[in-house]
Length: 308
Image (tube, rainbow, N blue to C red; front, side, top):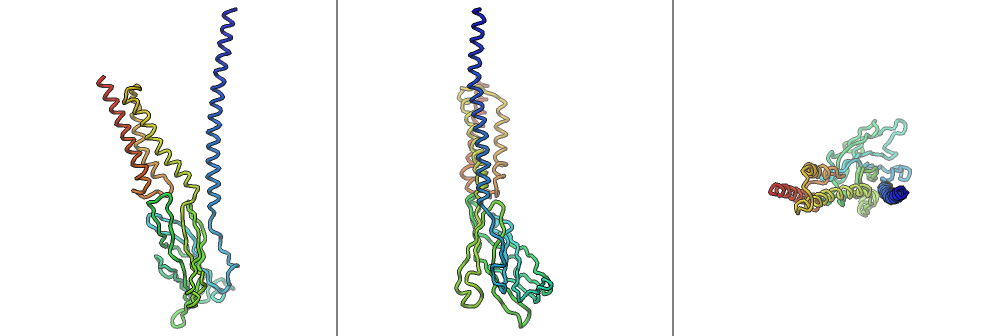
């Protein structure tokens, strides 16, 4: 009887010990799931806030105005080049609505000058889309807080050929979106355009581009991973070097994997920051130094074990 009572008591105590473990495991799992769901919700919320530029509304402009639509395509931060598509929407007096073609030869000149110069559109054809690049100035080394701004974008349209050729004003409209970037457009008021009859005073624009807020969360996560690798390596290596923990040779492969993982992790950062940017100076080089120090402590622990 006494033996059965003791066994029952021990079994009840074991069950009581298991319950807190199950509860702790469930709480940890719930915290991980909550953090994961919160991160997804936050990223998608930030991505929705970075909406593309509004589409072109031709009904809101004067039918006689010629619109030069600049559609954003891709930004090369290192080269400070912005790839765009140029579409021309001629005024009614320049367009044959019966066949949807130009009734005269057109040439569009975009300011500042682009890589292709003037865009020529022959009479009897519909204006085709033209791809070119323009300059967008910024500091790519400031990744991921870099921003880029174009010069004042304006355009003129040259109608006809020879002695009858004339220049008419054009209005620039910017549309489209850049993946991973948030673009905004500001109208440039220039009263001289009205005085010299070159067009509306606000026909020119400037485009400012900065990184979208959604990918910044991913950037922060990668930076935290980079910092955690040498931290964990030092936590393991220091006690081994001081003799507080037993030396374990299999950890050598783990240290080698950490060293070779740094550069790939750095290179998958959105936008691929150029070499020598501030993230290399503030994080990457110190991560490599800390990992090398941890590897040195690990080797010291190995030598010390051999001496013992």
